[in-house]
Every structure is written in structure tokens, then in C-alpha cells.
Amino acid sequence: MRWLRALVLPAVVAGVVLVTASAMPASGPTVTIEMRYSHFLPASVTVPAGQPVTFVLRNLDPIDHEWIVGDEASHSRHRTGTEPEHGERPTEQSVPALGMVRTVVTFPAAGTYRYICHLPGHEQYGMIGFVTVTER
Ligand SMILES: [Cu+2]
Image (cartoon, rainbow, N blue to C red; front, side, top):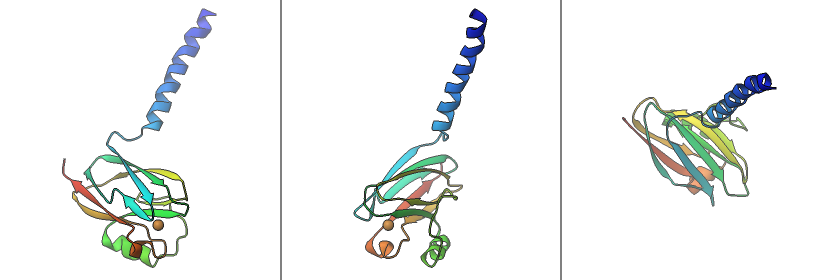
């Protein structure tokens, strides 16, 4: 049976390495943003440019929210947009009531962006936050 162990053990070790790698796809920082009482907490975060940043989006409200990060042109599009669900683009995520979504965004250059929930009335209510992207 020693031959079997010799074959199986490296496979198990390889499996563990793969699982670990996929659970932590990003080498950059992780930022947790909570959605509570239709506000983002924190409403301001600072991240480095050129590194994958893992955003953990936790919706503590019993209603759906979304987290859309980008420049003012993208926010203009979403204010009048008709897409009911987001998730395919890392910068556009729907977060269901009491749900959690993880997304990885790499900001190419330093600058300031806003994250906004574009569900009807939420931006007006104050569901806005800021990402400051700094040079490394
Ligand atoms: Cu919202």
C-alpha cells in the first residue's frame, strides 16, 4: 500500500494548495464594506493602484442593494440604466438582502471614484461612498 500513499499524498497536497489559491485570489488588500440602514460603512476607503483589491460587500439590511464603483460617466449610465441585476463586471455588484458578495477590483491608476447604490431613491437617501486610489 505504500505505493498508493505515494501517489495519493501529493494529489491531496496539490488539492489543498489549489483550494487555498482559489479562496484567496488576490494578493492585495481586503476591504469590507457594510450596507446598513441604506448607507455604506465605511463611506470612504483608500486602496492602492495596480493591485487586486478584494471587496467584501455585506448587506445587513432586509432589502436589496447594489455596489457600483466607477467614474462619473458610469454613474450617469446607471442612474438611468435598466439592468435589474449586476454581477458580471467586478465593479458592478448586486447584493441581496442580508447577503454577502465578494468581488476583486484592480484600479489601474490613482484617483477618486465613488461607489453608489443605484436602486431607486437610494443615492438620494445617501447611499454613496468614496474610494481614494493611491500610487504605491
Ligand atoms: Cu441600496
